[in-house]
Image (cartoon, rainbow over all chains, first blue to last red; front, side, top):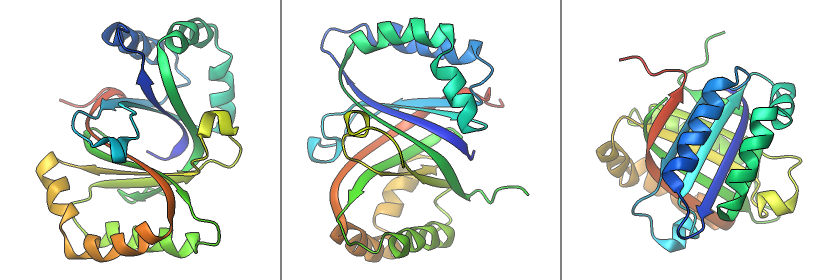
Length: 107
Length: 107
């Protein structure tokens, strides 16, 4: 799905309640219509040389950059961010207009 | 799109022919049926504190982990990887089974 992507890659602090934090994110994106797609995953096997110590990736898609900006200041997001940030050991965030090659985008 | 994800985040070496390298990747995934979806993007504005210096993200989806393994050893991939690796200053790779929350996956 093309659109404007918000890609967050993290390593959680040891002892964080990761399952609860992820459930909270799933609820956040389910409740906020601005988020058009959301998926996440955890790398279980990658060597540190490739993962650089990061373990989880979260990808959200918005129709346009303005929707992402609105999401950033959405009360639900602001509230959730405090919980999320407190559990993060390191984070990498990229935001970009996605170029979709496959499947061929419909016109 | 759920499935098995291969998420590559990089910073290219200065002076690399980035456009050509990306065109090569687009051709690679177009030619190899194992790759079910592919999209990429470049973060143009993110602060270094968030991007950690990374600039580009490439996301490929496979139906299953075995297809990703087959892609890794596919001759087209092996050939392309040499070009790609030579242009990389730093790289972060995560591989995982994606959990799709939105849009609600069809049964």
